[in-house]
Length: 461
Image (cartoon, rainbow, N blue to C red; front, top):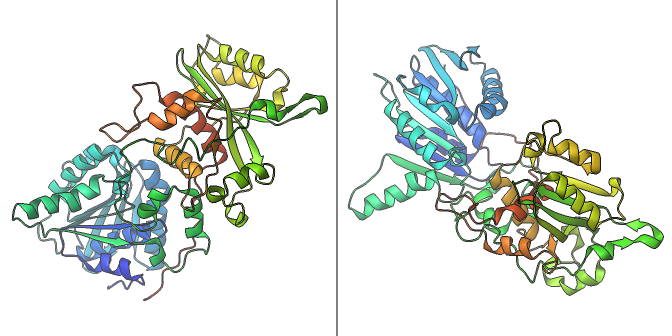
C-alpha cells in the first residue's frame, strides 16, 4: 500500500521531508496546516509500519474537536483500515500491508503521561500556542521517546502559526543561529514557511477579513507565517491618545425631553475593592459625519466599504468601587434617566461564581438591575488583546474604537502604560489591568476577532 496524497506545494515539501530529524511547517491562517499535519501523521505511520507514533494538540478539547475528526476523515478518504479506542486515551491502530501502526492522540495538558513510550515519530500541532515553558519541556520529553528500534524514519514535526518569538523561533531559529556563531551546525532542524495566500482555494473574503480585524503587526505572523515581535513594549500599542480620541460624552446621548436615550454598553471587571467599569455607546458611521471628516486620514470615510457599520466609543469610566452592589448603586446614580433595558452590562465571566453574600452571585445581582450579556468563560488574554488592538487600528489603518480620553483618564493611562512582563504576558502588578480588562470583555463580546470559515480544497499540484 502506497498512499498518494494530493496537496499544495508547501504541504508537499513538508510531507516529503522524512529525513530531517526535527521539522516545522510555520504558516499563516488558512494555509492548510492541520490538513498537512494529519497527512504527515498517516504517512509517518505508513513509513514506520509496525511502530508507534504520537500526534499532540495543545489541549484535549482541540484533540477531540479538530484533530480526531479530521484524522478519521482522511483515513476514510484514503481507505486506510483502522480501529479506534477513545478511552482511557484516544488511540488509533492503522493497518498497512507491512504491519499495524499505533497512533496515540495526546495533548500538552497531559504530556507527562508520554513517559515510558518508545516512539518512531511524533507531531505537535500549533506548538506556538502552548505556554513556552510547557512547550520546551514537552518537546524535550518527546525527543527522549524517539528510540524505536529498526524504525525507517525517525522524526519529530510540528505545524503552527507563529506567535511572536516563542518556542518555535527559539528552537528552529535562535538555537541554530547561536550554534552557527560557535562554528557548529544543527542540520537536524529545518523550518518551512508558508503564507495564507499560498492556498488559492480560500474564500475570496478570507484574507481581507483578517486584515480588517487584526492589528497591522499581526498580519506578518497570521498571513505571512513569519516571526514577529508580539510581546514587547506596551500591550495596547495600536491605541493613540490623539487619533483614537472622541469628545463624545454621556450627556450627548441623553435627550430626556424626547426620551431619546442611546443605550449604554458597560464592560465590567471584578476585583476586591477595585471593581471597574468602562461605559460605551455604539454609533453608526453616518451619525458622526463631522467627527469622521476631522479624522478622514485615519477613518477613511470616503472609502466607506472598508468600515464596519457600527463603532464603539468609550464615554465614561467608573473605577475603584468596593463591590458589585456598590457598582450597581453608582451606575444608577450616574445615569438615572436610563431604564433597565437601556443599560447592558458585559461582565467578567468570574461574576458567575464569585459571591457578594451567601446567597446571591454577582451575575444575579446585575441581572436584577440591568440587561446582562455575560460570557460563559473569559476569552484567552491574547485574543482579547488582539481584538482590542484590531479595533484601535487594524491592518487597513482604520481606527474603529474611540475613547473620550478626558472622561476616561484612568482607562487612557492603562492603555498607554500597561506593558508585558518578562514572561510575555500583560503586567497585572500595577493595577493597570482593571480598566482594560473591563473594556475588553465588552469589545470581545460585541466585536470579536472574525476568522472566516475556510472552504479548503486540496488538489494535485
